[in-house]
Length: 485
Image (cartoon, rainbow, N blue to C red; front, side):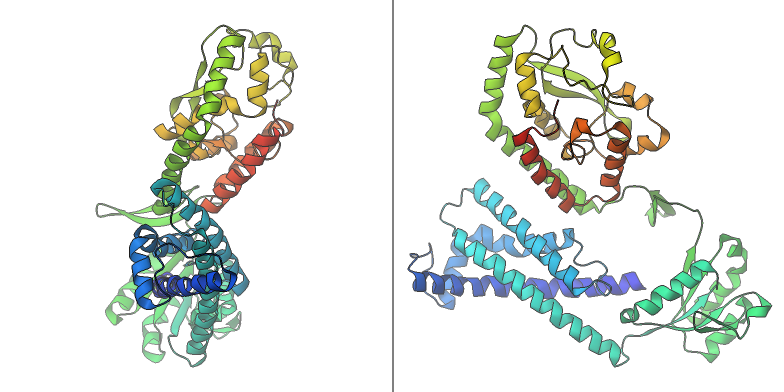
């Protein structure tokens, strides 16, 4: 019902956005030519004339950008939930989404320039295009809101609901419908099995009868959908009503408090013909996880190339400073407890793990984690590479392998996981990463329990935008060495 309407409107908006982006691309060509002429910036490559034919030639010569502008913007807008909760979102929130998408689009096109070596593509054009898209999208969204409001004001596209149930959850549902009149939903009346409620009003709507009266009410009232918002104890009372609605061709929806879950999200799915109800504490769209993995591969390759001189210098420094291997390998716990080998540059003396027990009384962290500010096992080179997180650069190869992500909760030792409290184990429900909220918030200055809470907050509020923000903050934390021991 609501989801189907939102999905249909979302498809319309995506089409409208695609048309807007194409127009912005066309408009940007002429604005760019105008600015270059007025301010004498010089000619743009492949811009032969300020005509439509000139634009077609320009588009052909910049084909990678021409073909990517619409998919890139639609994907970014989807990433920031521009096509979810369309009718309930404030206009200011919509503008904020467009601005965020515009900022990230510049990073995406910069990556395209770098990968494809598009040296002649105008950076000024991309900047003008980004601003044009943002302004035109804002105008389009404002116009679309006005059109949708007018449609509902004229009484079109309304759905008449008969609500079964008057309990607390049913009242919450009724208030939600009343507070969001723009959805186009109209409550005709209520149904409840208690004799004393007949004829009375709940949340401003009259109780029309009991469950067995529904077939009769369907003939007396215009009903588009019957919605059950009832306890699971009512399951046996619903069979005849659902069959009656099926015979009448009336749609039925059921909202039932099967379990009092506080974290997990429920969704209905199908397993080869078997309908299933799934309860997941972490949920993301497959396309979001695909983009996250794609960005992990892209960024890890870029960072490995850019940091290769630093890694080479570190290898030489470690070899000259102390005997032992260059790399330190350690078994860690990954997604849902999967074991994998984590790579780091060795920052301690050989046999450091055997000497750990002698220093446990000086542990400065609570919980199962060992941290010590002036750890005597750390070498001179180790202190430097730890301060600026250089010791973690080999983990980029773990990212390439898929063991970890760029952003995610830090992978713990299996022995640490064994000492976790039950609620702390939920941090294993997402693939671990090189950096996360803990790393950009003070690291060793934060106690263990707050560290675990921060990881769970990241999981519960995960989005691609949050990953971008953490990566941005990580850059400054690494440069300053903030919170590192």
